[in-house]
Amino acid sequence: MFKVSRKSEYALIAVQHMARRARDGVTSVAELAQAENIPPDILAKVLQGLKRAGLLTAAKGAGGGYRLSRPVQEIQFLDVVRPFEEQLSVVTCQNDHGGCDRGGDCTLRDPMKVLNAFVLRQFSNLTMDMFLSPHKLVHHARADVTIAESALHRWSAEADVAG
Amino acid sequence: MFKVSRKSEYALIAVQHMARRARDGVTSVAELAQAENIPPDILAKVLQGLKRAGLLTAAKGAGGGYRLSRPVQEIQFLDVVRPFEEQLSVVTCQNDHGGCDRGGDCTLRDPMKVLNAFVLRQFSNLTMDMFLSPHKLVHHARADVTIAESALHRWSAEADVAG
DNA sequence: TGAACGCGGACCAATTCGGTCCTGATTCAA
DNA sequence: TTGAATCAGGACCGAATTGGTCCGCGTTCA
Image (cartoon, each protein chain N blue to C red):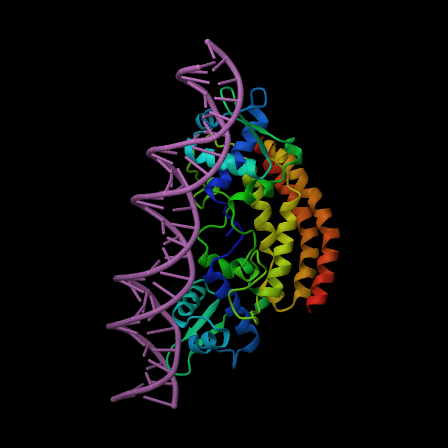
């Protein structure tokens, strides 16, 4: 239930790569595809998606390629993944339109709303520079614990409203 | 990327229902299917899956049905969902067999291992009684923060080993 | 002017998923 | 003892998704 799509994996690898091994900050699709052993055609689409999401800037023509549009520290994990994941919610009860396939009396909706908020919160502060070193990732997770603590007060209030 | 399968949703609803509205603690497939508006055939398979997982006990014959094999407080969210989710890891890098489709030098594996452990940890203490009341769920999330704090020390050690 | 490059639509094969259908095998109750 | 109720589970199906390929276009630089 947590698995990201293949495209998301490629996107994560791409951002990682560009943050680390970029020559002059610019990498072409072909170059990246060969270096990371990813099918070029699909990688092209992935990078296009990242560009549309504002994470990359593109330069056409000879010598062109992609470049990170901002430092990795300012790119969130969810930013990279979102363009390739149709929805980030835990249940269909809680889709992007806020709607629910099932009847209006689905007993799963309210608890799932809380759960979903909790999960997203855990990920929202995860930035891509942490993927360059496990140490940073672990350190973040620890910091996130305190962030979650304060965030929980809001959810608690919401839940009280929901009954 | 977080969405559970339809079967998992049905399973969650079923457990919820049986914990709450069960007559004599026993509920038949037909009964539950009608009450919760779920296709009977598929619900049957879901309940079979839950039984195989040891969460339910079945009684055949007239007047039979399913019953929770232990109190909801002792049933974890992941227990309910796992029979219907092929793998609980975030990336294919980190599948059930510990293997990776890609080459041995996938730069995603190590950070994802940490991330995956973190996510699973967040869910592992989530029990089904919390789904009966948002208050409990929120309360748990708060408690979980402190649990995560201690758990992080272990992951930190692991990450140090991983480099 | 042409090669290098991004852009993106059309298409495809394989898998997954939600769901149905059908045939047992048990067990209880009349 | 018979039959209805109930679980058990295999076979199958259509639709959607996914991962991937192919191809043609537009742009830009050398």
